[in-house]
Length: 488
Image (tube, rainbow, N blue to C red; front, side, top):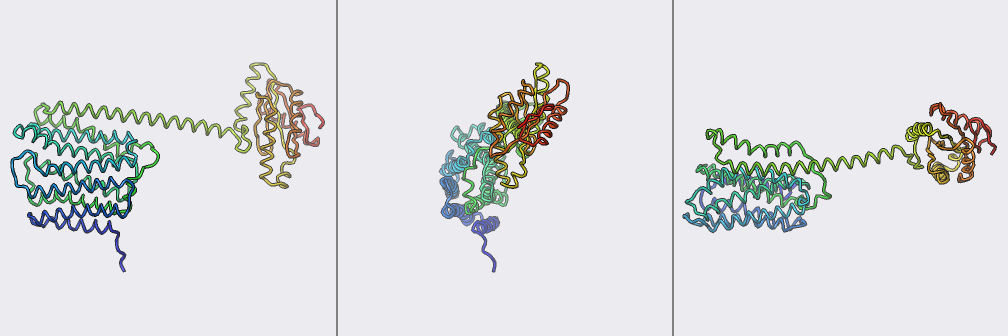
């Protein structure tokens, strides 16, 4: 038994089949009824989708539905109104209201997605819209504005349609570039808006050039609107429609992808391309020089604003990376268990201490400490208790060392200490005071060596290590210098 397809799939397939059938409907009341049936069905599908999916911010979807019904109303009035020479027609109210309602619906969706916080995507959409505005003025608005026979009212009414189309262009560009969910419902809504704009611009081109696309051509243009109505209805029926109006989450920097860069580059090249075309077509004369200059200035300022945002984004990311680098460097220099400097930090600190001692002609003593019988302690009490011994022992020792002293974990249960400014005898006294502070009844053995002013750090460390072995051989729980044994 075949599984029943989801409602949105059935509506999309059925709607597109009817759109194909519309091409063959007669150009009379039946054709008008078929057209309006698709548009009304799309509006009903939006209402059903709202009731079924219950999206947050349902007002945006109700506005989109109202805008679609306003267009249907305008179509009915257009069909029933006889042709005349009036500047203003009743259907203009419905059509223009449809623009306003649809733009408001998309704006509500954008606000809920958090796009109002993302200035970068807003600037990108304004760059694209500015390019379309320049083209619309040169090819659609200016010819109407120059037609004195229309009168002021007629000119304003004729300009209103491409102006509202620019509003939808801005909304589409903003929606497509903003962050947020991009599921099937999202792309169906975007398809609706793009199809609506394609139909509008085709009819505007035909009107301005007095081009008659014929019955079939007109029907094909009409089909773009119908396909958009079907796509919007299917998008509203899709369960993913609830995601479109949800906040996109914490604002994050939008990357400048290759697709976006190509799109913005193409938009900014429209003004010089139009300039070159007019100069070539008119023997060096540029008929729309002021408009092209204004468009170029607007897009230039928007590009500067976008570059400023990108520079600030890079600077912010560099600051974050610098902070992370500092944290990583700090983490790389610390022992994760005891929070003491690790062997890497010790290897950097020892040469520096030798240089300081040589420069100031001050004594420098090095000590190696080793917890006695630590392996047996681990085997008896477990590694967790052994870790606690290491942590508590180093905390007790560090608390009783001077601020100038450096205690580091050299490896396992072995630790090294730099004791600047004191002699071997003073170091022996200091370490003997630390031995009773070792917790959990444990002890440590230590070897001490004082720098002779000539030897390398490795040689100094080697002498201290030899002293440590002598301390262990002597019975442990004691401190031994490179040439003196001190009894426990």
